[in-house]
Length: 66
Image 1 (tube, one colour):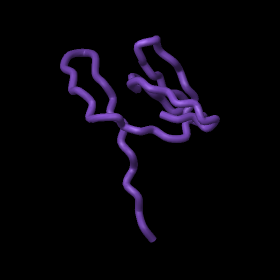
Image 2 (cartoon, rainbow, N blue to C red; image 1 turned 60 degrees about the vertical axis):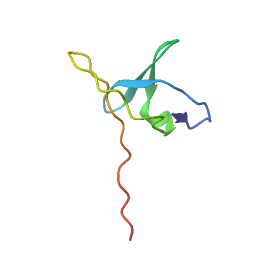
Image 3 (cartoon, rainbow, N blue to C red; image 1 turned 90 degrees about the vertical axis):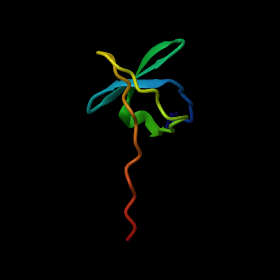
Image 4 (cartoon, rainbow, N blue to C red; image 1 turned 90 degrees about the horizontal axis):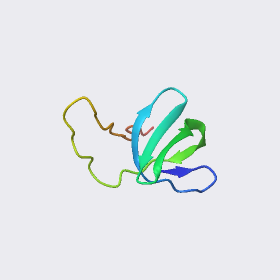
């Protein structure tokens, strides 16, 4: 994930709402405003977890050509 100021964040998006994302990484969790996010890149296919805790998959919306 890249922010609009060029900073690269790595980790797993564990939660989101209309305004913020929560990103978990080995160094801890961070809450990021969606308006500060420039690009989200999927590093690899996420592992599917079972049970109460689930990983959210980030998908890029399909582009429509006009």
